[in-house]
Image 1 (cartoon, helix red, strand yellow):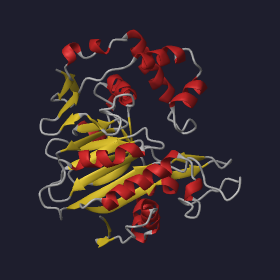
Image 2 (cartoon, rainbow, N blue to C red):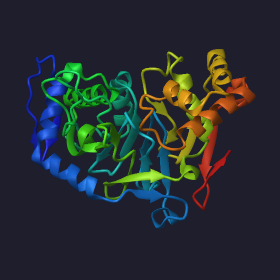
Image 3 (cartoon, helix red, strand yellow):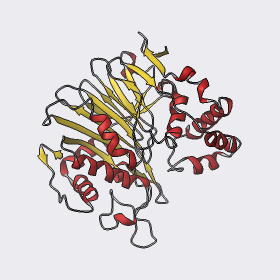
Length: 347
């Protein structure tokens, strides 16, 4: 159930286009337009080891398809970046302060992913208000009435079925899933699609923001990007695990669980990479940057400057470590504990 400004959002539950109709109503809502404008007016926070926001703060960082539920008593900041067609979402229990955040990439993980996120956020009271912030995606394939691209404020309500991009279908699925659940979701921020799109002189869209960070104590959310040193711990393994999850039936339709909420630990469960992944890495190790972008990204024109470098580092690791058992000796998880200085130490 979705609320805006404390008022439930009505909708026709029998409609075949419930998700799209609800998304359209939300994008048109004056309160959410104002919240999106306010979010858009903020300067993106550049979070690094030396930044004032992190010097005394404990951070949990999420990669694509990951989620984490954090306790404000143990974690000060939770966030993600590198999103183009993906969506970042944060759900906060306004009574307990518990926050679950995720970097969602495809519609097939949404329903199970929300259940995963809510498992530690929702208490026994079904009426607990849950604050929801949704940031990311952009107009990656503009709708049109003919063959002429149309620059739109967000989505063309009359041409949704002609929209072939990744972003729109993901946003529709997220909103539909929230609407259909019994929990009470109070949408606070909806900065997606056209509201998160800038256009170049040729009419090509790009994301305005690629990520966010939430202050867990207050529930405040800000546009953010993270220094590569903070995309940790175990960056390469976690990036490779994403690719492995597409071939693992136990992982392909759900979010990747990475963080131990009660103990403030990162726990990377064993994952296996197939011969197909290794062959793909070998095939692309000498490919051009453009070839890698076109083959590995849903949005090759909108990726960050380090996207190709990250892909090459993953390929290099797979080529030099073809046996997954080398990375998970005895089939045990890789566990990282936070040091007193805030960095992560492998146990």
